[in-house]
Image 1 (spheres, one colour):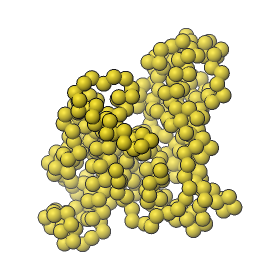
Image 2 (tube, one colour):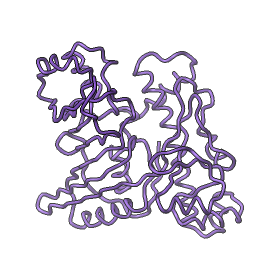
Image 3 (cartoon, rainbow, N blue to C red):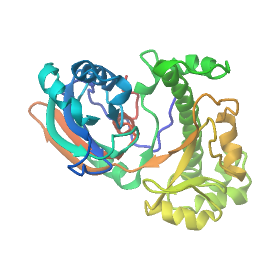
Image 4 (cartoon, helix red, strand yellow):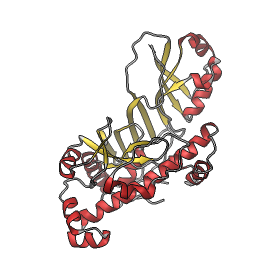
Length: 359
């Protein structure tokens, strides 16, 4: 599975490892706790522990079923992470007594009238330490990161989505097309990996189309893409890199209701101003499909027989915000911080800078 890159700078060298002392992520909640209600909201810092393991640990400490523990998103094991967990207030005394692991630290406690649900977060703040960065590469990273932050990046699913061998989507495809009902979280994750695989391949194709139009004359692009010259001419006038087609599905950025592109020029203007973003298909039950020319490009990456999971649309283009960078020439360590909307992967931002896979 190969993701095409949107930018044409030369590859940049640095050492990246996702470890607890190099990779930091903090969840930004969608709502602030009300400080009253029957649910305890825990702001938790954890190291070397997946979110699922955290839920298991809390369940054992409190006597709760795992399904009674609320969380907004999954955080990696190989990182230092801060995320929010909700539990019924009446088990707080058991938590105080039985939660003893040093891998978990409760930073804050608040109360709420409702539990936390999956997806109930704005986004995540990342701080990542890159090693073995030369002074020249440090300058290049700063320049490219600023450019990416301003103009945006393709919102690929990261390598973490596809398992250690990067092939979990194959099992997911087999399960999805078997027609059987999904059993447990593992099978759901595998099918989600298949959804993600199709999305990434669609997005990579769209990035390639945009690259051909952006980096060639109208005649050459028309030949390479087998598109009519008039269409290429209209697409090339769009000011942003990622070209929109009639029928593309967009949302107000970073979230809102889906709408379809009817006028490429006016939509492109809003896209350039970061007011809207195109979305890609996560095929599944009741998924919204693009229309017209856009669906012609989407259809090869659609599985209309996938009903095992609910379908959705995913942002195809995102912007990294709150960018911060610091370079220590003596240790050759480069620290980069940024914010991304929920569901986005910090590693895709780093890979666009590096112009290579990080694993």
